[in-house]
Image 1 (tube, rainbow, N blue to C red):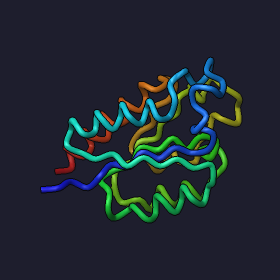
Image 2 (image 1 turned 180 degrees about the vertical axis):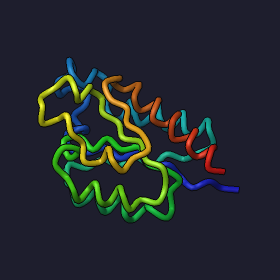
Image 3 (image 1 turned 90 degrees about the vertical axis):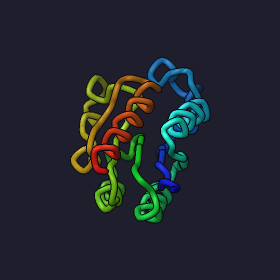
Image 4 (image 1 turned 60 degrees about the horizontal axis):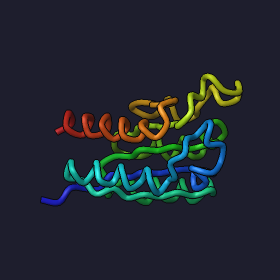
Amino acid sequence: MSRSPILLVNGPNLNLLGEREPHIYGAQTLSDIERAISTQAEQSGYELICFQSNHEGELIDFVQNNRHSSAGLIINPGGYAHTSVALRDAVSAYLHPVIEVHLSNIYKRESFRHHSYLSAVVQGIICGLGADGYRLALDALLAHLKASK
């Protein structure tokens, strides 16, 4: 029996990981993170579908278009966490567990980063643990999926 895939969605500027402010976001590239998380998902019997966009509407369309055909969602909304009610609404309409990830500790940064519109509509939030946050997000998502069986 084939399982529905897990989605990994990354928002604006995350395509620049490894070169943009590595003292904040780390030295790993987005491709490095996607490879590691894909391997972890495969070891748990899931395919990982990765998507990144700098465009709010593309992120919304991706989440909406996959809300019926996927098992869960890990999302790093980037700066849209602090500005996008529309992305929040798309995540709210998503039918399966969602874990929000931030590489940096948003609560130790500028005050405008202390609020995420998505946080109220996700199962959990991981921030400040760098690239390890993605691995932990997948662990949490897999635990949610196992508990819901």
